[in-house]
Each structure stands twice: as C-alpha cells, then as structure tokens.
Image (cartoon, rainbow, N blue to C red; front, side):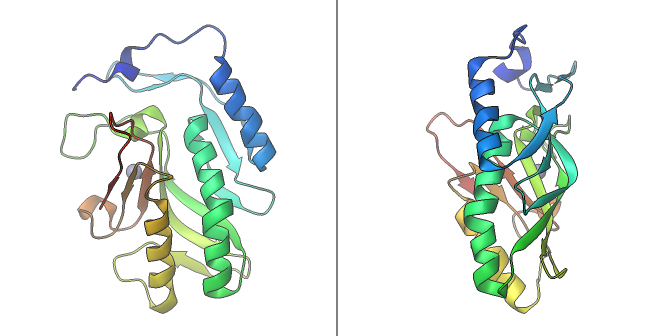
Length: 194
Ligand SMILES: [Zn+2]
C-alpha cells in the first residue's frame, strides 16, 4: 500500500481539541451521534476518533448509522441541511427525510489501486438514496427518471467544494449506484469532481 501519513500517526491518549470542537459544532447543527471505537489496521486504515452518526438533524435521518470521522460528519450535516433539503423542497415540494448511505468507514484500497480509499480513514460517505417526507425515494442510478435526474445533478454539482472529491454514475463503473463524497486532503486544497 502506498504510504499515507494518517496511517502511521500515533493516536493521542486524550481527544484532541479540534475533535472536541467538531463535536460541539455537530451538536449545535442538530446531528445525533455517539462515540465509536477507534479503528486501525495493519494495512494502514486509521480512524482514531470515530463517531457513529445516527441522524443528520431533527428532521433528517441517516440509514444505517455511519461510522465516520467528525469532520466528514459535519460536512455531511451542513450539506444536507443547507443544500439537499432546500433542493428537495424546490424540486419536489417536500422536505428531505432520510439519506441512505452505502459506505462510510471501510478498510480498503481505492478500486484498482494500491492507495487507501478515503473510506479507510472514515473521511468519505457513499449516498445511494434520498427519501422525501412523503415516502418517495430518489435512487442514485445511471439514468434517473424525470425530475430525479435534475435533483441529483444539482446535488452533485453543489457538493463539489464542500466535499473535495465527488464521484457518481458516469465517473466509473464503481460509482454507478451511489454518490461518493469525501474530504481527501490535497496539497493545493483542490477538488476532484468527475
Ligand atoms: Zn465511496
């Protein structure tokens, strides 16, 4: 596996201030979460201070719960409340009720590479479906019907910036059924959205 400095960083005995501050912000934003067990593996996967994210807000559920780092959780909560909800409202006239995630922390390399995936650091979330308050679902898929296509395209476009990597149907075969959002640290702070 190609080296990543996060793989070898020593886990501090006590929670660093930035992790505490993130949790405080997440609470204010309305996220519902609990602390989860640290993750680490011989392959270099590392998630020293994970949370189990249960709800994105009082009105937006996350299913199933996601083990993720706090920064990625905060980005997801902010994006869901400030972008996805209003986009759903204007496209369908309904509030967003649930986001179905397909992967959060997963210890694995990026497909077809020797580099660890951002999932291996709990720094990524894959979204497969959005469910509206009325119960209808918008699936991430290669050829979404009608209004769903516009909604998904708007979400995907707006995600580029708040998230540093945005992939989905059309990017490659691995992303035909979900949107991949992550906060990959890039030297120039740039984005990769395809
Ligand atoms: Zn992914």
